[in-house]
Length: 349
Image (cartoon, rainbow, N blue to C red; front, side, top):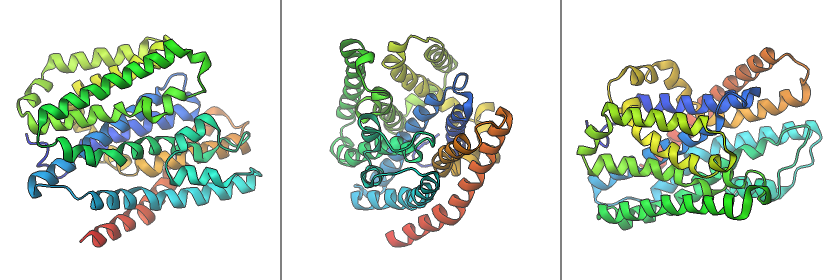
Protein backbone atom coordinates (compact mmCIF):
# COMPACT_ATOMS: atom_id res chain seq x y z
CA UNK A 1 0.00 0.00 0.00
CA UNK A 2 1.43 3.36 -1.00
CA UNK A 3 0.78 5.96 1.66
CA UNK A 4 1.89 8.94 -0.40
CA UNK A 5 -0.31 8.13 -3.40
CA UNK A 6 -3.52 7.92 -1.39
CA UNK A 7 -5.70 11.01 -1.63
CA UNK A 8 -7.37 10.62 1.72
CA UNK A 9 -7.29 8.06 4.51
CA UNK A 10 -10.60 8.21 6.32
CA UNK A 11 -9.18 6.52 9.39
CA UNK A 12 -6.89 9.52 9.81
CA UNK A 13 -9.95 11.64 10.47
CA UNK A 14 -11.15 8.91 12.81
CA UNK A 15 -7.92 8.96 14.76
CA UNK A 16 -8.10 12.73 14.91
CA UNK A 17 -11.60 12.28 16.34
CA UNK A 18 -10.19 10.04 19.08
CA UNK A 19 -7.63 12.70 19.95
CA UNK A 20 -10.16 15.53 20.26
CA UNK A 21 -12.61 13.35 22.21
CA UNK A 22 -9.87 12.53 24.72
CA UNK A 23 -9.22 16.25 25.16
CA UNK A 24 -12.90 17.15 25.32
CA UNK A 25 -13.89 14.54 27.90
CA UNK A 26 -10.79 15.22 29.94
CA UNK A 27 -11.76 18.89 30.18
CA UNK A 28 -15.38 17.92 30.88
CA UNK A 29 -14.52 17.41 34.54
CA UNK A 30 -13.19 13.90 33.84
CA UNK A 31 -9.47 14.63 33.71
CA UNK A 32 -8.82 12.25 36.60
CA UNK A 33 -9.78 9.27 34.41
CA UNK A 34 -9.44 10.50 30.80
CA UNK A 35 -5.88 11.16 29.47
CA UNK A 36 -6.45 14.47 27.72
CA UNK A 37 -2.72 14.99 27.30
CA UNK A 38 -2.55 11.88 25.13
CA UNK A 39 -5.16 13.45 22.86
CA UNK A 40 -2.87 16.44 22.26
CA UNK A 41 0.09 14.14 21.61
CA UNK A 42 -1.91 12.16 19.04
CA UNK A 43 -2.99 15.41 17.39
CA UNK A 44 0.65 16.53 17.11
CA UNK A 45 1.66 13.14 15.70
CA UNK A 46 -1.08 13.16 13.05
CA UNK A 47 -0.20 16.71 12.05
CA UNK A 48 3.44 15.80 11.47
CA UNK A 49 2.47 12.71 9.49
CA UNK A 50 0.00 14.49 7.20
CA UNK A 51 2.12 17.54 6.49
CA UNK A 52 5.14 15.40 5.63
CA UNK A 53 3.07 13.11 3.43
CA UNK A 54 1.68 16.07 1.47
CA UNK A 55 5.15 17.54 1.06
CA UNK A 56 6.54 14.24 -0.21
CA UNK A 57 3.67 13.98 -2.69
CA UNK A 58 4.44 17.48 -3.97
CA UNK A 59 8.17 16.77 -4.16
CA UNK A 60 7.68 13.49 -6.02
CA UNK A 61 5.35 15.09 -8.57
CA UNK A 62 7.13 18.41 -9.13
CA UNK A 63 10.69 17.99 -7.86
CA UNK A 64 10.26 20.79 -5.30
CA UNK A 65 7.79 22.27 -2.82
CA UNK A 66 6.32 25.73 -2.81
CA UNK A 67 7.02 27.25 0.60
CA UNK A 68 4.81 30.21 -0.28
CA UNK A 69 1.84 27.95 -1.03
CA UNK A 70 2.53 25.95 2.12
CA UNK A 71 2.12 29.02 4.32
CA UNK A 72 -0.90 30.24 2.38
CA UNK A 73 -2.59 26.89 2.94
CA UNK A 74 -1.76 27.04 6.64
CA UNK A 75 -3.21 30.56 6.83
CA UNK A 76 -6.53 29.64 5.22
CA UNK A 77 -6.71 26.44 7.27
CA UNK A 78 -6.18 28.02 10.68
CA UNK A 79 -6.67 31.77 10.74
CA UNK A 80 -10.32 32.34 9.69
CA UNK A 81 -11.79 30.00 12.32
CA UNK A 82 -9.32 31.33 14.87
CA UNK A 83 -10.39 34.94 14.25
CA UNK A 84 -14.07 34.12 14.72
CA UNK A 85 -13.29 32.12 17.86
CA UNK A 86 -11.27 34.98 19.32
CA UNK A 87 -14.01 37.53 18.62
CA UNK A 88 -16.62 35.35 20.28
CA UNK A 89 -14.27 34.70 23.21
CA UNK A 90 -13.71 38.44 23.68
CA UNK A 91 -17.46 39.00 23.72
CA UNK A 92 -17.87 36.35 26.43
CA UNK A 93 -14.99 37.86 28.41
CA UNK A 94 -16.57 41.31 28.25
CA UNK A 95 -19.87 39.95 29.54
CA UNK A 96 -17.96 38.17 32.32
CA UNK A 97 -16.17 41.39 33.23
CA UNK A 98 -12.71 40.07 32.36
CA UNK A 99 -10.21 42.83 31.63
CA UNK A 100 -8.13 41.33 28.84
CA UNK A 101 -4.93 42.83 27.45
CA UNK A 102 -4.03 43.47 23.82
CA UNK A 103 -0.81 41.52 24.23
CA UNK A 104 -2.94 38.44 24.76
CA UNK A 105 -4.38 38.83 21.26
CA UNK A 106 -0.89 39.27 19.85
CA UNK A 107 0.21 36.05 21.54
CA UNK A 108 -2.66 34.20 19.86
CA UNK A 109 -2.27 35.58 16.34
CA UNK A 110 1.52 35.58 16.35
CA UNK A 111 1.62 32.11 17.87
CA UNK A 112 3.41 32.50 21.16
CA UNK A 113 0.38 31.81 23.34
CA UNK A 114 2.07 28.78 24.88
CA UNK A 115 5.00 30.76 26.29
CA UNK A 116 2.74 33.68 27.20
CA UNK A 117 0.51 31.35 29.17
CA UNK A 118 3.48 29.70 30.90
CA UNK A 119 5.42 32.79 31.93
CA UNK A 120 2.75 35.53 32.16
CA UNK A 121 -0.73 34.03 32.07
CA UNK A 122 -3.98 34.96 30.35
CA UNK A 123 -6.63 37.15 31.96
CA UNK A 124 -9.41 35.40 33.78
CA UNK A 125 -10.05 33.61 37.02
CA UNK A 126 -13.72 32.82 37.54
CA UNK A 127 -13.91 32.45 33.75
CA UNK A 128 -11.18 30.00 32.64
CA UNK A 129 -9.20 31.96 29.99
CA UNK A 130 -10.66 30.88 26.63
CA UNK A 131 -7.65 32.13 24.65
CA UNK A 132 -5.27 29.88 26.56
CA UNK A 133 -6.42 26.88 24.52
CA UNK A 134 -4.44 28.21 21.56
CA UNK A 135 -1.15 27.05 23.15
CA UNK A 136 -1.05 23.91 21.02
CA UNK A 137 -1.49 25.94 17.82
CA UNK A 138 1.64 27.85 18.81
CA UNK A 139 3.63 24.63 19.19
CA UNK A 140 2.56 23.49 15.73
CA UNK A 141 3.23 26.81 14.03
CA UNK A 142 6.67 27.17 15.60
CA UNK A 143 7.54 23.80 14.13
CA UNK A 144 6.13 24.63 10.70
CA UNK A 145 8.01 27.92 10.57
CA UNK A 146 11.15 25.83 10.13
CA UNK A 147 10.01 22.49 8.74
CA UNK A 148 9.62 23.38 5.01
CA UNK A 149 13.23 24.62 4.90
CA UNK A 150 14.43 21.53 6.74
CA UNK A 151 12.46 19.35 4.32
CA UNK A 152 14.03 20.92 1.25
CA UNK A 153 17.48 20.46 2.76
CA UNK A 154 17.20 16.76 3.56
CA UNK A 155 14.50 15.25 1.33
CA UNK A 156 17.02 14.06 -1.26
CA UNK A 157 19.25 12.37 1.34
CA UNK A 158 17.18 9.99 3.51
CA UNK A 159 20.12 9.08 5.77
CA UNK A 160 20.65 12.74 6.64
CA UNK A 161 16.94 13.15 7.30
CA UNK A 162 16.83 10.28 9.76
CA UNK A 163 20.09 11.29 11.44
CA UNK A 164 18.90 14.84 12.07
CA UNK A 165 15.38 13.75 13.05
CA UNK A 166 16.58 11.15 15.55
CA UNK A 167 18.99 13.73 16.96
CA UNK A 168 16.07 16.13 17.47
CA UNK A 169 14.08 13.45 19.25
CA UNK A 170 16.98 12.62 21.58
CA UNK A 171 17.82 16.27 22.27
CA UNK A 172 14.20 17.05 23.15
CA UNK A 173 14.11 14.10 25.54
CA UNK A 174 17.40 15.04 27.18
CA UNK A 175 16.22 18.65 27.55
CA UNK A 176 13.07 17.50 29.33
CA UNK A 177 15.16 15.25 31.57
CA UNK A 178 17.42 18.17 32.46
CA UNK A 179 14.49 20.45 33.27
CA UNK A 180 12.64 17.84 35.34
CA UNK A 181 15.55 16.26 37.19
CA UNK A 182 18.27 18.91 36.92
CA UNK A 183 16.28 22.08 37.54
CA UNK A 184 13.42 20.31 39.30
CA UNK A 185 9.71 20.40 38.55
CA UNK A 186 9.05 22.40 41.69
CA UNK A 187 11.21 25.22 40.33
CA UNK A 188 9.55 25.36 36.91
CA UNK A 189 6.47 27.41 36.00
CA UNK A 190 3.27 25.39 35.77
CA UNK A 191 2.97 23.58 32.43
CA UNK A 192 6.53 24.61 31.47
CA UNK A 193 7.26 21.21 29.92
CA UNK A 194 3.76 20.26 28.82
CA UNK A 195 3.06 23.39 26.74
CA UNK A 196 6.45 24.67 25.55
CA UNK A 197 7.56 24.16 21.97
CA UNK A 198 11.12 23.22 22.94
CA UNK A 199 9.81 20.33 25.03
CA UNK A 200 6.81 19.17 22.98
CA UNK A 201 7.61 19.60 19.29
CA UNK A 202 9.20 16.16 19.17
CA UNK A 203 5.67 14.69 19.28
CA UNK A 204 5.26 16.20 15.79
CA UNK A 205 8.64 14.88 14.70
CA UNK A 206 7.60 11.28 15.43
CA UNK A 207 4.77 11.68 12.92
CA UNK A 208 7.18 13.25 10.43
CA UNK A 209 9.58 10.33 10.80
CA UNK A 210 6.87 7.72 10.26
CA UNK A 211 5.58 9.45 7.14
CA UNK A 212 9.09 9.71 5.69
CA UNK A 213 9.89 6.11 6.62
CA UNK A 214 6.81 4.71 4.89
CA UNK A 215 7.42 6.80 1.77
CA UNK A 216 11.14 6.12 1.39
CA UNK A 217 11.57 2.66 2.93
CA UNK A 218 8.70 0.59 1.49
CA UNK A 219 9.64 -2.52 3.47
CA UNK A 220 8.93 -0.64 6.69
CA UNK A 221 5.18 -0.90 6.14
CA UNK A 222 5.21 -4.69 6.42
CA UNK A 223 7.34 -4.56 9.57
CA UNK A 224 5.18 -1.90 11.20
CA UNK A 225 2.05 -3.93 10.41
CA UNK A 226 3.25 -7.07 12.20
CA UNK A 227 1.36 -8.23 15.27
CA UNK A 228 4.43 -8.04 17.49
CA UNK A 229 4.98 -4.40 16.48
CA UNK A 230 1.37 -3.57 17.27
CA UNK A 231 1.60 -5.44 20.58
CA UNK A 232 4.75 -3.49 21.44
CA UNK A 233 2.87 -0.26 20.76
CA UNK A 234 -0.02 -1.32 23.00
CA UNK A 235 2.32 -2.25 25.87
CA UNK A 236 4.29 0.99 25.58
CA UNK A 237 1.15 3.10 25.45
CA UNK A 238 -0.39 1.41 28.48
CA UNK A 239 2.85 1.77 30.41
CA UNK A 240 3.03 5.50 29.58
CA UNK A 241 -0.49 5.96 30.96
CA UNK A 242 -0.30 3.72 34.02
CA UNK A 243 3.09 4.69 35.41
CA UNK A 244 2.26 7.75 37.48
CA UNK A 245 5.66 9.09 38.56
CA UNK A 246 5.53 12.85 37.91
CA UNK A 247 9.13 13.21 36.65
CA UNK A 248 8.56 10.31 34.26
CA UNK A 249 5.34 11.86 33.00
CA UNK A 250 7.12 15.13 32.20
CA UNK A 251 10.08 13.49 30.47
CA UNK A 252 9.97 9.96 29.05
CA UNK A 253 6.21 9.73 28.67
CA UNK A 254 6.07 11.84 25.50
CA UNK A 255 8.89 9.89 23.85
CA UNK A 256 7.36 6.54 24.75
CA UNK A 257 3.99 7.65 23.42
CA UNK A 258 5.64 8.80 20.19
CA UNK A 259 7.24 5.37 19.74
CA UNK A 260 3.97 3.66 20.66
CA UNK A 261 2.02 5.67 18.07
CA UNK A 262 4.63 4.80 15.46
CA UNK A 263 4.10 1.11 16.23
CA UNK A 264 0.29 1.40 16.23
CA UNK A 265 -0.32 3.79 13.35
CA UNK A 266 -0.29 1.34 10.44
CA UNK A 267 -2.65 -1.01 12.25
CA UNK A 268 -5.03 1.76 13.27
CA UNK A 269 -5.06 3.76 10.05
CA UNK A 270 -3.35 2.23 7.02
CA UNK A 271 -4.40 -1.43 7.01
CA UNK A 272 -7.89 -2.95 6.62
CA UNK A 273 -8.29 -4.00 10.24
CA UNK A 274 -11.28 -3.90 12.55
CA UNK A 275 -9.78 -0.85 14.26
CA UNK A 276 -9.34 1.08 11.01
CA UNK A 277 -12.88 0.17 9.94
CA UNK A 278 -14.23 1.66 13.16
CA UNK A 279 -12.14 4.79 12.75
CA UNK A 280 -13.37 5.08 9.15
CA UNK A 281 -17.01 5.16 10.25
CA UNK A 282 -18.70 8.37 9.18
CA UNK A 283 -19.39 9.31 12.81
CA UNK A 284 -15.68 9.44 13.65
CA UNK A 285 -14.78 10.92 10.27
CA UNK A 286 -17.23 13.77 10.88
CA UNK A 287 -15.78 14.49 14.32
CA UNK A 288 -12.30 14.42 12.81
CA UNK A 289 -13.29 16.97 10.20
CA UNK A 290 -14.65 19.43 12.76
CA UNK A 291 -11.90 18.66 15.30
CA UNK A 292 -10.07 21.98 14.89
CA UNK A 293 -13.14 24.08 15.71
CA UNK A 294 -14.21 21.55 18.33
CA UNK A 295 -10.85 21.95 20.01
CA UNK A 296 -11.23 25.72 20.12
CA UNK A 297 -14.85 26.00 21.20
CA UNK A 298 -15.03 23.23 23.78
CA UNK A 299 -12.77 25.23 26.09
CA UNK A 300 -14.89 28.36 25.69
CA UNK A 301 -18.02 26.36 26.50
CA UNK A 302 -16.25 24.82 29.49
CA UNK A 303 -15.46 28.30 30.76
CA UNK A 304 -19.03 29.54 30.33
CA UNK A 305 -20.47 26.56 32.22
CA UNK A 306 -17.82 26.81 34.93
CA UNK A 307 -18.58 30.47 35.56
CA UNK A 308 -22.35 30.70 35.16
CA UNK A 309 -23.58 27.15 35.90
CA UNK A 310 -21.19 25.84 38.57
CA UNK A 311 -23.94 24.13 40.57
CA UNK A 312 -25.34 22.15 37.64
CA UNK A 313 -25.08 18.37 38.12
CA UNK A 314 -22.05 16.67 36.60
CA UNK A 315 -23.96 14.72 33.94
CA UNK A 316 -25.93 17.82 32.94
CA UNK A 317 -22.70 19.82 32.71
CA UNK A 318 -21.07 17.18 30.53
CA UNK A 319 -24.14 16.87 28.31
CA UNK A 320 -24.49 20.62 27.90
CA UNK A 321 -20.80 21.01 27.17
CA UNK A 322 -20.89 18.29 24.51
CA UNK A 323 -24.01 19.72 22.88
CA UNK A 324 -22.85 23.33 22.73
CA UNK A 325 -19.31 22.41 21.69
CA UNK A 326 -20.50 20.31 18.77
CA UNK A 327 -23.05 22.92 17.66
CA UNK A 328 -20.45 25.70 17.63
CA UNK A 329 -17.85 23.47 15.98
CA UNK A 330 -20.28 22.41 13.25
CA UNK A 331 -21.28 26.00 12.54
CA UNK A 332 -17.64 27.04 12.42
CA UNK A 333 -16.74 24.19 10.08
CA UNK A 334 -19.75 24.74 7.83
CA UNK A 335 -19.75 28.52 7.58
CA UNK A 336 -16.13 29.50 8.26
CA UNK A 337 -13.67 26.68 7.64
CA UNK A 338 -15.14 25.18 4.49
CA UNK A 339 -15.80 28.48 2.65
CA UNK A 340 -12.34 29.82 3.52
CA UNK A 341 -10.61 26.60 2.49
CA UNK A 342 -12.44 26.77 -0.82
CA UNK A 343 -11.38 30.38 -1.21
CA UNK A 344 -7.81 29.39 -0.42
CA UNK A 345 -7.80 26.71 -3.12
CA UNK A 346 -9.16 29.20 -5.65
CA UNK A 347 -6.46 31.68 -4.65
CA UNK A 348 -3.70 29.11 -5.09
CA UNK A 349 -4.97 28.15 -8.52
